[in-house]
Amino acid sequence: MGIAHKYGENVDTDVIIPARYLVTSDPAELAKHCMEDMDGAFAARVRPGDVIVAGKNFGCGSSREHAPIAIKGAGVACVIAPTFARIFYRNAFNTGLPILESEEAAAGIDAGDEVEADFAAGVIRNVTKGETYRAEPFPPFISRLIESGGLVEYVKSAK
Amino acid sequence: MGMTMTQKILAAHAGLKRVKAGQFIEAKLDIVLANDITGPPAIKEFEKMGVKGVFDANKVVLVPDHFTPNKDIQAAEQCKLLRSFAAEREIANYFEVGEMGIEHALLPEKGLVVAGDAVIGADSHTCTYGALGAFATGVGSTDMAAGMASGKAWFKVPAAIRFELVGKPGKWVSGKDVILHIIGMIGVDGALYKSMEFMGPGLKRLSMDDRLSMANMAIEAGAKNGIFAVDEQTRAYMKAHKCKNKALKKRIRVYEPDADAVYEREIRVDLSKIRPTVAFPHLPDNTRSIDEVGDVRVDQVVIGSCTNGRYEDMKTAAKILKGRKVAKGVRCIIFPGTQRIYLDCVRDGFAEIFVKAGAVLSTPTCGPCLGGHSGILAAGERAISTTNRNFVGRMGHVDSEVYLASPAVAAASAVRGRISNPEEL
Image (cartoon, rainbow over all chains, first blue to last red; front, top):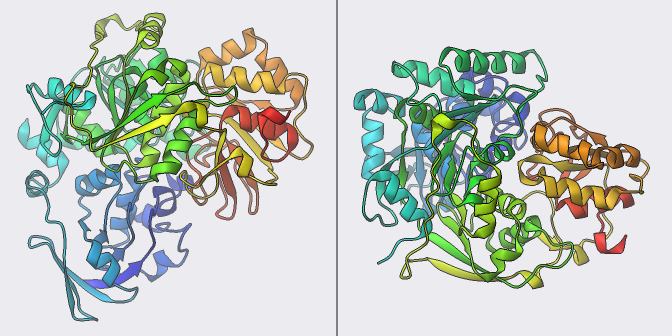
């Protein structure tokens, strides 16, 4: 998958994408400023397939969907944290950004480790350290949502 | 096993007799809301869904309040998109600059939300309406778009924390101090995924404006919603703020938790023990009582927002600023929540007090609160603000600082030029 970028607890949506950039919802434009107020070098450093690993309550604060859109736009394949703020949790699934809840992965993975994730099995592998972590599997309802291709498709199919 | 207040509202909107924590449900919505930031992406998603129209043109509310009056060309384009969509889809409750307000001050005032409603809004502070005994929660633009198309939303039924309020708050202690105190106690994820239900004999000591500012900040503890038991004050408020959009046929439904409702945790809060409270940078749970603040000089004071831009907030600020001056070198920005509150400020003489004190009185807008416009902080600057978030860079430069407090503490701080206890003036 990719390399881990590691952050602390309570990463809020204002640092994921500051309000001054909310004049657009274009993923490429938002991606340029992703994590800017916390890690100014992130946008230049991140590579497609990389993973963000963080502490509890990731994505707290505003309901801006621009936050998961910016992360996905930056090429991030997955965000791993012990817990996510609830609006961010919904927004991530609704916009197709995979997220995994795993306390042991969040603790075990260091910045720069190579990480792989199997969403279906709920397994995260740390290739660098040779460790494997369990993640919370997606609830059945979320799986159905993802199977139908996100919320827009889900609503279309229910019409 | 009984249901909490929130669970009862959700069960009723899902057409189910009972629900329990953890269950996934689909609930009918009474109001679906968006603003000029979250609305445009929602409209794009909505158009992709290929539905004929919105589920009910009376139940969709659109308020351009964040980057308005238009702060730049891009913001103007976003507002234009919202405006054209509202016109095309004949959205009854679109509020243009001049009649608008900050959404969460505006909707209760217009009677668009009443007790028993289920509301989603593409803004995290949608939880404000819990003060009226409604279930209200913030969502993203895609959820809002789906709600606008179908009139429904999926929810995982939340577990709940019950806050038993007792005692009488001191003179300068407001709902803002109570909620900052509670967030300081349980943490920014203390109610993650859960409901915060506020009940008890202390409730009668909290005005509707107090309750609205408390429910507003439930999200700052990670909660899905904050909700208050309905009492005489709630009924009086709803009576005084009847919805003029008659086609909506608003109906008040009062829900009480079952006697055997399951609460994950119960917390007793003695209002008489709470001191004016300040949240230090950079999280709302980093709280200290006013007695522990120390010498903190400020460059800017902000009084207003969806948290504290209501009539009582303005009245408190006026009481403190009357006959006094904003300290030299301090900028004091006051922004009432709605046009109606603005007019009240003019009519009741608050506007004159503010201007004479050397404060600026701004039009209703979310601008300064989220570092959007009209009050941005430079590097190294410090603000005390009655808003709801003090994250890194929230009000401007990444090296600026925001301290959260009540209107009384903020106004007293404007006079002194440092964070101050209103009791000491």
